[in-house]
Amino acid sequence: MAETPDGAQERPVLALDRIVKEFPGVRALDGVELELHPGEVTALIGENGAGKSTVVKILTGIYQPDGGQILIDGQPTAFPTAQAAADAGVTAIHQETVLFDELSVAENIFIGHAPRTRFGMIDRAGMKRRAGEILASIGAEIDPGVRLRDLGIASRHLVAIARALSIDARVVIMDEPTAALSQKEIEELYELVDTLKAQGKAILFISHKFDEIFRIADRYTVFRDGQFVGAGLMRDTDEGALVQMMVGRSVDQIFPKRESLLGVELLKVVGYSHPTEFEDINFTLRRGEILGFYGLVGAGRSEFMQSLIGITKPSKGVVRLEDRIKIIRSPADAIDAGIVYVPEDRGRQGAILDLPIFQNVTLPSLGQTSKHGFTQLAEEFALARKYTQRLDLRAASLDTHVGSLSGGNQQKVVIAKWLATRPKVIILDEPTKGIDIGSKAAVHDFMSELAAEGLSVIMVSSEIPEIMGMADRVIVMREGRIAAELEGDALTPETLVRHAAGIGLKEDAA
Image (cartoon, rainbow, N blue to C red; front, top):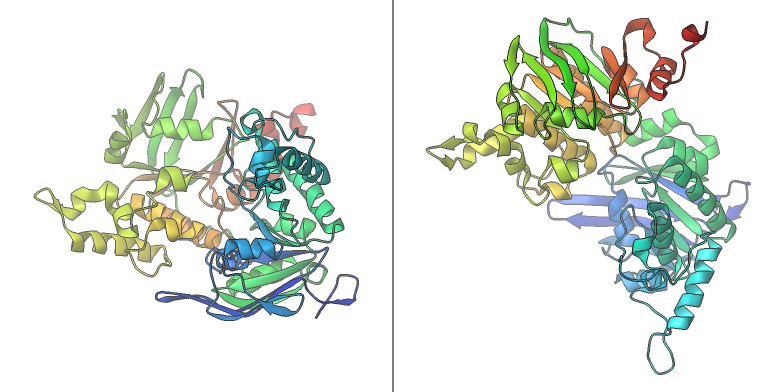
């Protein structure tokens, strides 16, 4: 039995003892351990691919372990189905929960397990009453009878939580619950976690955001490559120690920017404007430079980048590449000119998840892998292998579907796809969003390597440490216009935020 935060000894509500899970050619879990205690939050920490999602599926009855034991109150048990897990009081709140717009809040909460009358009919009055009680228990002022389509995003999230709690759970799994929430909604979620703790529920919290983990977790458990690395109390550790446990090495330098000699001017954008999204964008980009674009939500950064590569049309403006004017009317024109774009939403815009890795990588480069109008499989595999190896892609084979990869490996596939076109300029829009710290370091290292080889990089990022750690120069956008261009000593967290928010700088006030 583990020590509680106040020093006492307490038996966990649920424990995993040396759990093993194998898939063809891969041992996803190799003897992992986990303990969840009543009234406490345990953070499950690990890189993408560490085994976190597999554990969640075992805990919720979707997967069955190939070895080891699941213990409830110290007694061995099994979850042969999702219903069995629910009957044992285990529920999960996922990042994306399927809800139904045309059903009422109460119907969404109890779908699949609605209360029944003695005649076997759905007890709608009882369902509505019980839904109201659950919503009230989490502080949600929502009418159980209203249709879901009439609610905002934050209220929908509360309905998803109420749905998970409708089984009277003892164990609540929160899998990246803040990914789609605003800061205000995140604070409200923290209050909900405190409420659930006060109710005595054991909470498993999965997040790659260390500020969240240190804010709400009482305990931690770390997985690496499907193995249990360590566990303990949050009060006894720090960020550096957790990072070292996650990646098996010290990551003192998450932003490995290499010193590189910047070359001649490669790209020049003059007077680029759009009727509604951005206006009068002017900048230059040198060979081998990493140029950062920073701004708050709605600043127009992504909209400008999408126009630059031909997804939307500007109302005016000129693009010069190697001192020659380029007319970019479509993404094909941009690719032909040597400008490629890695989008922020890699799942919907960057990759075709149902296709294997090799076909994703070679899709924009079929001219290199075709002969007389027919694709050559050997050439496709050779091209895909060349660029995925450079990025240290982790997958069983190049036949693996991209949708089955971790977020960090999906991002590597998208980057490999565009590098295979041999571009001159690569635009990376939030390149490390939603990936773990080890994968971030790998992407940053490769970005620095590309710049050192003479490729010009435009990096759009909302993360101040990333912008400051990787960019040679930063353009700050606000309300669709360039607010500042910063480098050297002028580039500080304070100047970035002040320019992005339109707040007067100290020197302006002097």
